[in-house]
Each structure stands twice: as C-alpha cells, then as structure tokens.
Image (cartoon, rainbow, N blue to C red; front, top):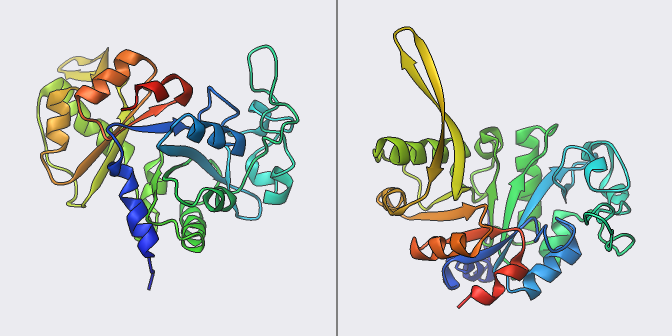
Length: 288
C-alpha cells in the first residue's frame, strides 16, 4: 500500500492554489541559468516561480538525474550519453560549461548534474513537473525508478510526469501522477482548432492534465482521390479550445512556449492553469 502524507496532500493543492496562471520555470529557468541545475532552480524560486519543470534521464546505475540533450557535449565539459555515466560521475561534470552565447559565467560555479532525489529533498515544498527524455532507457524501468524516488521523498502529492513520448507515460506505475499523452492532447486540439469539433477524452480519468505549446505549428494532410495535399497550419489555444477541454470533467491546461507579455496576457484571459517560461525573471513582476 502506498501512503501519501498529509503534507503531500496539502502540497498537491499547490498546483492550483496559486494565482492563475502558475508560473513554471522551464528546465529550472534555462534562459536565466544553466538548465536543470541546482543554481537554476534556486534562482527561479527567487524570481517567484510557482513550480519547476525539470528533465529526467537514467544514469548508468539507474538513478534518475536531471539532464535534457541526448549527449553531454551539448551543454557540458564532457561527452557521451547520460547512460554511460554513474550518478556519482555525473555529479562531477560541469553542466554550466557552455551556458551563455559569448561569455561563460557559470563555468566552475558548481552547476553540476544533480539527482532527482537530491532536488526533491532540497526543496520539499515546491511542486515539480518531471519531463522524461531518456532516449535509451526502458519505459518500465524508468517508471519503476521514478516511483521509488517519489515514494522515498514523499513527493507523489507534488509532482506530475510528462513526456513527448507516449510510451513513457503509458509505462508509469498507476500511483504516479501524469499528463495526458502528447498525441491525445495534440489530436484533441487539432479537432477543435481545425474542425471545430469537441470529442470527449479517450478515457474517463479524473483529473486530466494537458500540456502543449500555446501556438503549435503542424502540417495538415488532406486526402484526395488522386493523391494527397500537405499544408502548414497552427494549432492555437483559444476560448473555444479551452472550453472544449474543460467540458469533460476536471481538466487542467498548461501552456508551453510562453515567451512574451502578450502570450502571458492571453494565458491570463483564457484562465490557463500554468505557463511554462524559460526566463522567470522576465515574468515575476506580472504575478498578482
């Protein structure tokens, strides 16, 4: 039996208790500091972020750690996939090595690759969104390892798991809170935006959490007798779309890719539950 403490139940309300929309620091605030690092998360919280979005992979020894690209060379002073290194080895790699376009102010400043457990323990009252991007991890193993960390840190009441790959969401243990799959979210938004149809969700799960870009560019394929045509289109959240998603039970909507004051204002007007931003420093003053 899995027990969730009273503290965990209270923290679960943090996802919706703050002034709408919730300010979510993408990768810990990747535009303000080296992404997915302890300094980035600390700075994001100082900049009044309500929740932190972090990216999770499995190390060689099966430990969930925070890192996004498929190779360490993209952001650090090392190279190779995360899965080639143990968690202890990753903790000695400089994840701030390449941050900054010209100067590199975060080099040798302790911005290393932390474990998920360490992050959850350091900020025990902060809501976290966990984005699985582990290209060579088995989904079942990832789900098992995540659950173990969440149980150990008593964090099941303050996290929610996302992935662009449906297989990771489908493989999560039942106890782990998760988003609706990206493919279902995208399909439902397309039906509303392009066809003005509002189909019910694929399953009656309560509550349901959706996350997608505020404006998502796609290609529309039309079938004809003599072939098919492909044309560009943009899926956009508007009142019709939000009303559709919320017309079937308890639905929560997070807008990704909020980069301007206009985007933020639109999220406010549509009563979004949260906005994902790269630079919390640019939006903290807009919070009520």
